[in-house]
Image 1: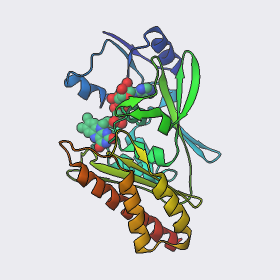
Image 2: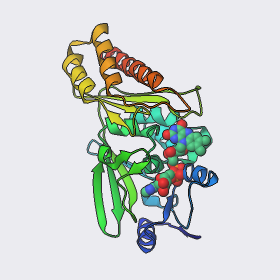
Image 3: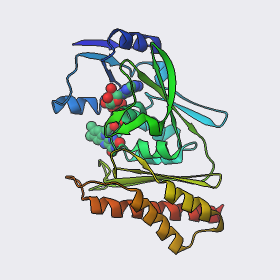
Length: 278
Ligand SMILES: Cc1cc2nc3c(=O)[nH]c(=O)nc-3n(C[C@H](O)[C@H](O)[C@H](O)COP(=O)(O)OP(=O)(O)OC[C@H]3O[C@@H](n4cnc5c(N)ncnc54)[C@H](O)[C@@H]3O)c2cc1C
């Protein structure tokens, strides 16, 4: 096994160009679980958690650029004023120990439908930036996530950062699991209200994170006049309709569908309450 400990972005890109099928290792909280379960075979490894360019974030001109190596602990501690929903999601990732190692880039790289950061990134219309020796490209997160644990990453490519707009309206994240802490989502939802436009993304209820165009349009049409309880219920129903859940060892499809409607309604109630207060 070869291991390259990259200390700059150029190092990491060069190592990946030399061995394009290397495993990129950031916090290792998914890779090591896979390895221990004997799913993964590590032949060539490029460690990226000492690459300074990946471990920083910056705010400029209404956009927040979050390096792929930024940990969930950093998101929780440092980014809540710009992306409160992402900070809410960060708070629910594993335990404090996991959050100090695990990165946003690793969440994207694994691309589990249950990844807590992903519904928020989808609802924020995030853009994922990638680099390889062939150059740079950027993909909307909805195109980056192509299926369960499948991404648009090409061999030899590295996620460098994810860019999100900083919005001023309500944003929130909610999750249901089999217990309250250290739990993989059985259903999750992220809601963003951005200049009167509503965006809703669902996790753990489909092969990958799902946006809900009909629920979004309905809420966009009704939110400005304040939504009645019946309209919130209709919004939740449209969210449930957008879900494509399956039965598995954590929950039945029927429970997931029900749960995601409850989460969507709760988030919308929070958005309405905040709208009344502001
Ligand atoms: C006990 C435990 C609890 C957990 N709880 C949660 C939870 O509640 N919610 C949740 O969402 N997740 C949870 N996870 C999963 C995991 O912590 C997250 O998915 C985390 O964000 C992964 O980040 P990482 O840096 O550790 O990724 P790694 O394990 O280092 O990498 C994960 C994948 O991403 C790729 N990758 C990493 N960085 C890059 C990059 N810059 N460019 C290209 N590819 C890259 C790797 O090659 C690999 O395929 C948990 C894991 C454990 C062990």
